[in-house]
Amino acid sequence: MKYSEYYFLSDEKFAGQAWPDRLLYKIQTLLSDTFMSHLLEFYGIECPHCVQMHALVEKLEKEEGVKVDRFEVWHNEKNEKKLLEIDKDMCGGVPFFYNTKTKKFICGEDSYDVLKKWAKGEEFVQE
Image (tube, rainbow, N blue to C red):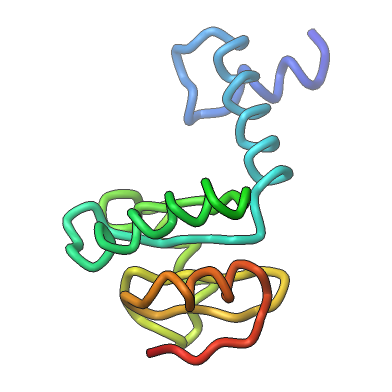
């Protein structure tokens, strides 16, 4: 058995699963981390402000050709951990938007114009 096969077979998280399933999970995880957009949105499914902003994000992606990666944090511990790593006393809630290139963020619900400027790396003032 090769070392890489042993690594996947011995991973406790995947006990009882065939090693190809484990390998696929590892590859998907690596790819999502490698090709993640620099525009991040953290939201809660039941959050009414998040629902309002989602419509603006869809418009932004369609009109500006950008990709915003979305992370649901109220029901997903991994995503919540990512939010806590990024949101260091900036917002403390959702929706929370973070641009990893400019380090600019939007806290809460805002206008389409502000969201667009945030995504393009332009200066903006939260309303």
